[in-house]
Length: 193
Image (tube, rainbow, N blue to C red; front, side, top):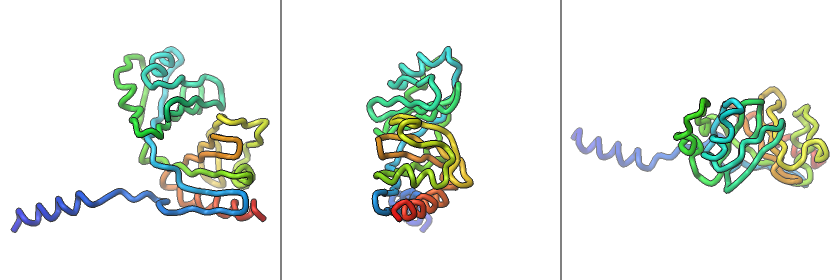
């Protein structure tokens, strides 16, 4: 009997899949859509400037050194968060932590794939939607395509990244994702009014 329970448990385990906190949710208003971003690998990377070249080569994307900038190549993006800190997001399904494994220069790389959730805000009302709870000036002249920043949305910390003229990606901690999504969904309806 124990053997059959083991097989049953194994069968059940093989059909279990991880459910995200925002799976199936979307919201929209006139001129704006709020949706869950596709799953991605994420890495929090810290390194001194002396290690940037080696890490950039290993990751296949040049780590930006200028505040509030990002770089992208082959589905992998590096977002500057501080003088020695980047958030690396890989939307192509490749693990950036594994990619930098052979780098000998001093650095810290932590997989934060399951800690973060990405929320996409798009459309002509996207800027107004995020600005409803974010004190940062997100106007295109000040925050152009490719700009990114660690900031706040309401009462939580986020990373906001302008991925297109009217498109943004908001990264937040999984535990705050329901709050962030509800906030953005309400703001989308207000922006449309």
